[in-house]
Image (cartoon, helix red, strand yellow):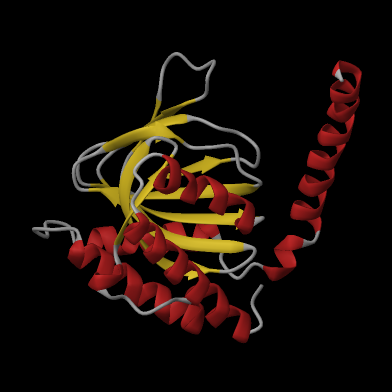
Amino acid sequence: MRLSFLALIPFVFYSFRLLAFVKDTYLPNFFVFDHETLQKLSQEAIAETKGASSPNALFESLHSKLKATYGDYISEYNYDDWMFNNAGGAMGQMIILHASLTEYLIIFGSAVGTEGHTGHHLADDYFTILSGVQTASYSNQTVASQYMPGDVHHLPYGYAKQYTLTPGGFALELAQGYIPTMLIFGFADSIFSTTDPFNLGRQIYFTAKCMLQNALLGKI
């Protein structure tokens, strides 16, 4: 049994490498979002709404810019579509702006602050800070990296970090890669920890709805 397990290690390693090669070589043909453009739009929205009493003005401004840039790939913004998200021990709030098999775009954050594990993902993750401060570190990093509004925190494919968000911290999060594999991480805490079927149902509904809408546009 032990030998059989050891024999799987090279298979898992080379499968991971193959998936990474496909992600870098072929999946970009299906991407519609550019993380540098998203950062620019975020910085513009931050500057335009500086001094606002709540982040809602920032979110609305950013959504308007995203809609003007990416059209029907961006879902309509509705305050009733915000939901809790529990993943990697962190609890936050999110709204889905785009979901497809190769990309997702959400606003994620927390009015009260949060901390957790990013998870290991078969995707690149670009976290553009909109408000508050994020700190993050790898397991061998003894001084945390800090990200301020307008900064982008890139979590590369296959890596993981511990992270925190200060109260009122929100970010525009873009993931590009094998998105269905990320849903396991996204749903697990709601199933096994918080046991919140209502919120889990909302996550599944809005994710599936958005993926279907984009599939009808030819976006996978």
